[in-house]
Image 1: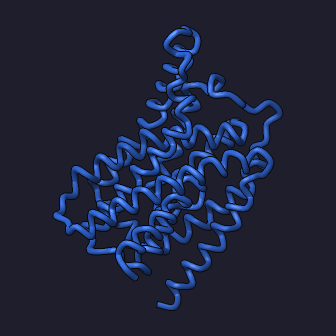
Image 2: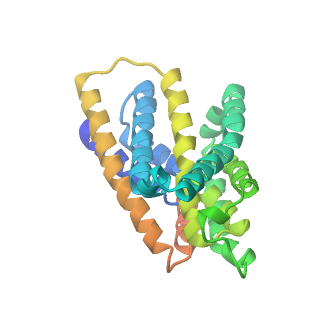
Image 3: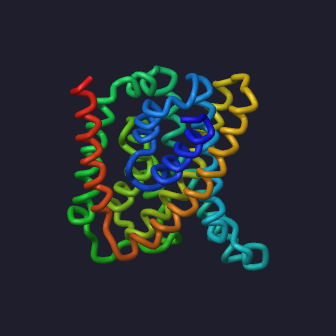
Length: 271
C-alpha cells in the first residue's frame, strides 16, 4: 500500500481510537504492524504528529468550555474557567511523574514488546466498562464541571497513570475512574477529553524532543495527510461519543475490547 494511503488509514485509526475507550495504542501497534508505515524513527514522529491533531480537535470542540467568550467581561465565568484550568493541571500532575519515571526505567518500551500484556489490559478494561456503572451507581452523580473537586480531579489523574500499560486506554482509564468516583456519564467523558489536552501535549513534546529524523518529501506529505485525517476524524469521534453517551452506556466498547483482546491473543497463539 502506498505510504500516503497508509498515513490516511492510520489517521482514521488514531482519530477513532484515541477518544473512544478502546485503546489507540493497541490499534496503532496492531495496524502499524499490518501497514508498515515506515522505519522506526519516522513511525514514532508520525504517531506524535497525529496525536497533536487529536489534541487540536479536542481544543476546537471544547473551545467554548476552555475559553468562553464571557470570561473577559464576567468575573464569575472567569473564575469558573480558571478553576477548570487548575483542575486540568491537578489531574495531569500524576502522569507527568509516573510517565517520566516509567520512561526512564524503560518500562514503557518493555511493555510495548509484550503484546500479551496489551491483550490482558484490553480484556480487563472491557469487563470494567461493562460493569462499572452497575458497581458504582450513585443517586446524585456530579453532573457539572463546577461540582468536580480538586481531589476527584487528582484521583482521576492518578488512575490515568494505568494508561502507560498498552491496551489500557487513556480515555477508558479516566472514564472508568470518573464513573467510580461519582461523576455522571457525560461529565466523565467530558473531563476525560479535557484531561487529554495537557496529558497528550506533554507526551507529544517529550517524544518530539527525544526523536529527531530527516525525512523525504513523501514522508512530509504523509505527515500532513495523517494530521489532517486524524484531526477531522477525531473531531467527529468526540462529537459522536458525547451524543452517544447521553442515551447509552459504555457496554458497546466493553464488548468490543474483549473481542479485540481475543483476536490479539489469537494472533499471538498462531505466531
